[in-house]
Every structure is written in C-alpha cells, then in structure tokens.
Image (cartoon, rainbow, N blue to C red; front, top):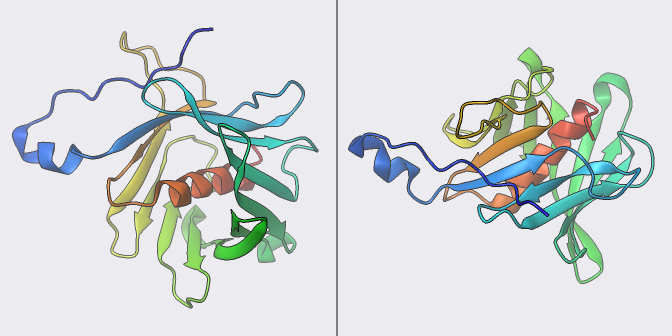
Length: 192
C-alpha cells in the first residue's frame, strides 16, 4: 500500500526560518478508511495514519468521534440546535468519561467562533468556514495564524482533489484542538 506524504517545505528566506521551525504538517484525506462510511483520515509526515474519524451513520451525523490509529476515542463532537442556532460541542474522551472542551458556532462573514468550556469570549476563529473552497485558516484571538489548511499539491505541481488537504499546525498550538476544528469545519460544510 502506498503512503501519502506531505510535501517537503520549500526553501524560505532566513528571516522566516525561525517562524517555520517546529511546525507540523499533516495530510488530511476527507474520505473514510471504512467501506461505506463517512469520515476522514489524518496522516503524519511519514505517511502513517495518525488520526481518523469514522461516522457509520449518515453524512453529517449528529455525533462523530476523532480516534487515534488504534481506534481509541480522543474527542467526541456533537451537533446541537437547529438552523442559525446550530452549534458543535466538543468533549475530550478520557477514561470513558467525556469532559466538555470547547464549542463552535457560526459567526459573521462566513466564519466560525470557538469558545473554550468555562470561558465567555471567543478564543479561536475559523476564517472562510462556510465557503465551499477547501482553503481556510484557524487564527487565535490576537489574529495570528494557528493552522493553515490548503489543497495538497504534489512535488510536480499537480493540485490534488478537493478532498486531499495539507494541514500545517504551528508549534505552540494544541494539535488535537486544531484537528477537532478541522473535523467541525467538515461537519459544517457537510463534507464528512
């Protein structure tokens, strides 16, 4: 079985080397590894499956689980509410208990706002969340990019399909939180 590899980082000027150092690149394939399932698979820089999401029900189901490669549930995402009051509650799965972690709601200008459990203010924002284009970014409260998602491009310059993405996560960011936001964005756009 062939491995899916992220592209090596292009050479950059020395001024941005410090900024790029420590970033993690993932390949996100918005297809389930299970036949007749809905979900996605996340590959690390070595091409091994790192995380997966499988929803055995209908596309855009009310609950999905983000699992590690062994199938252990790491986070649970539940859709609640209807229409413009719809939100996605995300819980960490620890020791067979799910502790509330954060909530995602649609925001103005086609984005989504992320509020951590117990907080009242927005701490992350997903830009271009409701757009049909696969390119978007996750930014912190200060506006700095925490993660960028773009269509995957081969070394020869061929752009792959809209369901194969490159996720670049900043070194200081919580990778599990960012992956949870990518899954929520897929649920918002009904691509999972």
